Length: 480
Image (cartoon, rainbow, N blue to C red; front, side):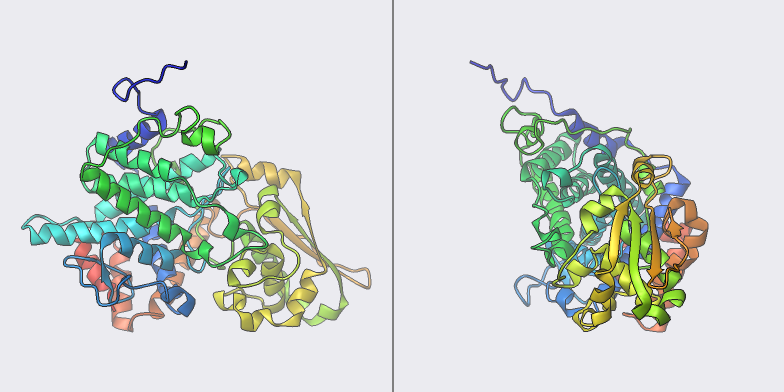
């Protein structure tokens, strides 16, 4: 009979302990990391503000029970809601992710590390206001930026070698793990408490990817990260209040995450946890579209002037791509809703060719009824370039290459337009950051009067002032 060690004999899973050590002990001293975290803050908030234009998003926002009052609650940016930190994290996370326009990390697993900002901002605002009520010093925004760096790192390094999608599991599990760890640390959790919290996040497991794929693609993909980051806040708060953890939540024979859900394969951290992920994060600057298709969108928009007047002459359109894009967003047949359309490389490319631009409105039903879109989709072939697939996984390149070429019935064709690196890639930072700032201003203008737009933008643009700003004061600026 197999001997099962008692809890006192068990050693905590290394991944759980490493994450806890990191959030407690690592000091972010990389100027690049903190500066990039500031841009993440700006861009992520802006994505949330833009999403508030869409009723399908805002129907999810507000208190669960209308009229609920929460003393020292967390504010939801761009609204007047003041909620408990768990539900505020869901609200903020839902708005951030709704339009698929926030930052992205691509590896064996992909995801959007700025999704963690839902939990980080909700917890920071609550803690700051609570401390003031108790006569203590509130948190300042340097705490938020450091938490952003660490959440990005935890989620991103887990994603490098651990593919949830190949097991049918959704990447938001890594959001839950990251939020749980950084928020537990923000609540001054001990190392043991943080390990307890993180172990419970692993035991929680992950949602299925059902809602991201045919025939079930749906709007849950737009609130799944809000759900994950809010659950992280809940588990962190439980742990610092004394809830127990599970030392071998990953490795326990038969019942641990690895045996039950990962085919017995070990969950690994392939790099030391520092600030690698945020320094290499991909900003989604140009177009609200699934990131594997960003470069295809750029190619299509470039080809628009050559194609727009010759739609009836098109014989075929060839999209050359990489394996991950083909596996995730190569779709034929009917597309049922905006969530389906913004994850279809053919739809994204068709919009770029037809309109010379791609906006969130292009995924709505009104545009989707245009018969020219499906007519173009039917003429598209998606093929893999093995080199694109290799470069996608190369840590020194991290490319997301696509190419688009249009062939006409008379035997002529456009050039084969190739983009290896999208505008938000680190290799194109100098080109991208001015446009990211412009995107932030445009998104602010959808929600605030010009005077407030200028105040928010000026503060976020001044790194020294922002770092010293009290969290509750910053959040007050974001209340309409």
